[in-house]
Image 1 (cartoon, rainbow, N blue to C red):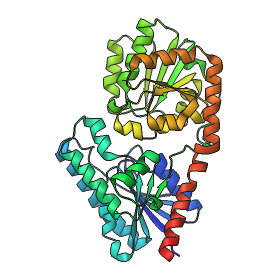
Image 2: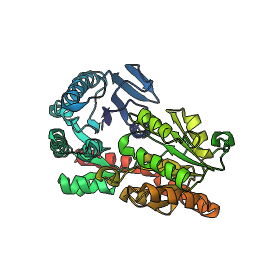
Image 3: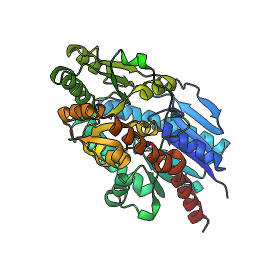
Image 4: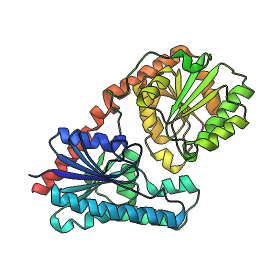
Length: 397
């Protein structure tokens, strides 16, 4: 039986999107023919390339939409380009399945065009868009209700779904009436070959005894203000001048948070590197004594699995984070859990963990073993293959 997959992702280019790239290359290794449609960006500007057996077709997008009109323009252009490329790929290479990766939840509209050719839609649920909208904008307006509508229509049209965790599976079944047998939990586990433990570089610490590491997007909903408040408390209230914070990552809130750090007089204790290479990122995280995840408590973050937590664990780093449902599932005893959205408690937990070396070592080992034995992509990717085997077996009947 022909097993040709077209993956469509709108918000990030491939291979920059780690989850999509791991899915695509895993399917190729299992004998599937895989094509990908994605936007340009993040240094990936070629409109076509073949990489590790994956055929990647890219298109240009307008700048990220702001407001109702901006989002409509972005979604319209993306859908138009995705339909054009899908038609081209269908004629040149063919596909049996369109595997749509949200956000947004409108990619099923591309798949509808190919329904008459026997092409089915499989939904890869990366983000819960209604909760993401509220996390970004703090309100429920017209765009929020459009997210509810499109999520519901996506699940109604999908033959099967991959979801990132049990919280998302519950949403698929209870909110969107998907049959449990058609929902596969496919966690975004890190590839252990990419996250290597290397010697620390003491120069990064700027002469401080301890270092706290962070990697991720610098956005408002990522809780960067809570982290900055915690650093301010650690330095100016607890008078701990021996701790350095290395913050790796770029994002829309970076300039704002850097300015606030300057206003608080924290330049000697915190560095914002912006986007860095994988090599520099590994150097920073391996130098850190502990790592932090300041994602604020909201419905989106509480139900979502954060890749940075898994990456910290893969490098045997103990973690401090707010007490969120999926964060606790991922890390378990590899983390201390501060009261949700309490910057003071976050600061106290950071100091407490830094002051207990043996506890740090034990927690780091627990997290590392959990990745190696259960949560690495080598383990979690089995759900991807199981899901597709199930789908094609059902189709053959």
